[in-house]
Structures are given as structure tokens and as C-alpha cells.
Length: 404
Image (tube, rainbow, N blue to C red; front, side, top):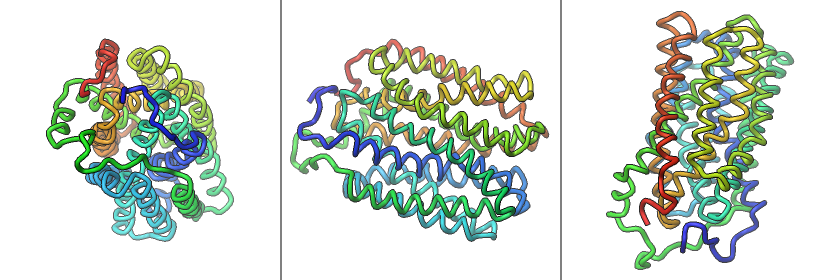
């Protein structure tokens, strides 16, 4: 089967993509990115330092890093649908615990569960969509990423409203609502999502152990993985600390929430549009452009901390960051034959998880060390320049798979 040949008897795309959108909403927004919005009231209520807050984000990323390959193995053995449902169930338990917990050690454990649950559900769902719809890979993965934008928009409005309406307990209600949404998504995935026909043990299409090492060592796959790791690191730093940067600059929680909501609303459309653009124009071209826009966005707060500067930052991030995610996810699956997609995507996701593991700890330490956010933001800009140089190399990659 060629890279762009649709599998026979495909399920309804709208149903599968809806499952992907909700999975991305719960696993990426609620379990990872919403922490940056919840952090200010949560930190104040629990009297946490910025270093402790960064450590909580690091624990979540560590759980993701340690179990992302395990999640891929589970998806291969049990089926991606069951792995996704298990991950969402774990997230439901973690959200419920965070809504009730006050002890810092217990919260650390629950944040680790968020990483574990995300490892079991996000990568298998992306692999499912890429396998079922290879001819529209950029578009369907971009539509899935629209769930991230919609979630950021809703979270940016919801969390400040809950804090205003319910005071110091508003952040707890936010975690509780996340848990209820995750529980509903578990049911939807079990009912609506379908696995491809499993490959028999003796089938010649089944990947051999040696094939995995061909993928792991291939320079093109490693390049993709490195870019994915940098993007993941920058994204989590921006998500956790940029809202606090806006608040510390004197613009208020409500303003920060509205800026995040605007960014999320823009990214609802930007993911599918960038994905469609990459299907037509090429992954490398679109990826390089998106990373360039993100680099400009991250550099703006270094010039000024005015409201206009932060507005432009969140505007550009909303227009381009989801596009960068969509294209590196789609491009990584382009590098291998269809039967290798779960292996390749789980592998590059390890780099993504590694970036998200290191990002909060590095940024938190830089903020504490410098007494401000400038050094941490400058670090993200330098990292993005490395990713941009690698993206320019990706533009020259052949269209044929690296491991066929």
C-alpha cells in the first residue's frame, strides 16, 4: 500500500475526527496546557513558589516521557481504541483528584497521572487518523488539533470566570469540569472510534524488530523528532508561564484569560488550514513558515511588556503554533510506510515528551534565577532558531518514505 493509498472500508471521517478532537481537548488542553491558566489562582491558594509550580509541570511531562512508548506498545497489543479509552479513564481519575487535593505530595502524584494518561491516548489517536486517512493526513490531523484551539478558547474564559464567581475554590471546579468532560470522551471513544484490521503475527506486512531500529536511526526521522521536541518544549513553557508573565506585567487575570481565549479561537481554524496548506504546498515549506512566525511571536515580549505586545504575541501564536504541531506530526508519519506509522510516531513523540519534561523545569529555574521572565523567553527564542534551521533541511527531504 502506497503512502497515499486510502485503506479499504474506512470509517466515517467526521466520526473519527470528532473522537480525535475531543481526545486532543482532554489530553493536550485539559491535562497539559490548562495548567498555565489554572496556575495563578492555584499557586496563590496553595502558596506554591514558581519553582514548585514548574516542578508540577515537570512531573506531568516526566510521566508522559516514561510511558509514551509503553502507550504505543499497548496500542499495538490491545488496539489503539482501547489504549485511548484507558488513557482517558486515567485522566478522569487524575482530574477528579486534583479537584479535591491540597497536599503538595498528592498533587505531584496526580500530575504524574496526567502525563501517564496522555501517553496512552494522544499518540495512538494521531496514528489512527494518519493510518485511516493517508491521502488527507495533514487535514485530518489539523482538524484534530482544532480541539486544542477550542479548548484553549474555552479554558481562557472559563477559569477566570470560575475564579471570579467562586473565589479561591474556582480552580478546583475547573479540574472537576475537566474530569467530567474526560469521562464523557471515554464513552464516545468506545462507541465511535474504530481500529484498522489487526495484522497477523505471520503477516509479511507486520514490522520486524530490525525495522524499528531502521526507523530509530534514520537521520530524517531523527531530524523530525528533534524539531518536535523543540516545539513541545517551547509550547509548554509558553502555555505554563506566559499567562503569569501577563499578570506580573500588571495587566490582570481577566486580560490574560481573554488573550489566551483569543489565541485558542484562532488556533481552531489555523490547524486545519495549515494542514491543508501542507498537503498542497509541502510539509517542509509550511513548517518552516509556521516556526518563523512562532519565533517572532516569542521574541515580541523581549522588546516590550505592553498590552499591545502581548496581544500580538497571542495573536501570532494562535495563528501559527497549532500549524507547527500539525505539520510536524503529519511530516513524521510521511517518512515511513503506512505499517510503520505507529512505531515512527511513538518514537518522535518521545522527543516531544522529553522537550515538555525539560521545558518547565528549565524555565522555572531561569525565572527564579533572573527574577523575571526575560531569560526564559530568550531561551525559547534560541531553541526556535535551531528548529527553524532543521525545518529548512526538511524542505529538501525527498517525497518517498525514508523507511519503505
